[in-house]
Length: 150
Image 1 (cartoon, rainbow, N blue to C red):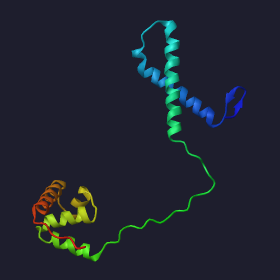
Image 2: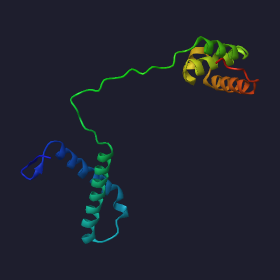
Image 3: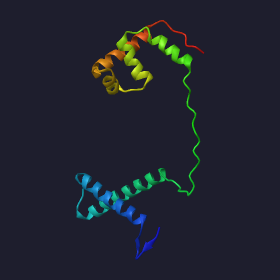
Image 4: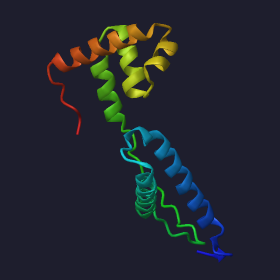
């Protein structure tokens, strides 16, 4: 921390001003909780500022980072490759569903669209999408077990 004329400079000054501002805001929000006379007010206000300062300090300790000049090398992450056997299995399971339920489940579970995106893609309401998804998943859950290829 750098000091100039008994005052912190740079980031330390900004941090001190932020703590003071947050302490004043907290005091203003909780003034109704204060019980005491004029002499007790200074102690109460100091206690509020002390607690705010400690909270800021603890938060800074949890989020501490150490800056470096070097960027770590990014290591590529290999994702799972879709296997044609898995795709064939999924299509064979979905083939037994009614058209709307199959289309909704394909959009949501295979393509990863949300309810609004699926509704827009299929030209139906969001409610119809939710109902078709629920019915389709229930039918798949209640259907006899289909053995997935190894």
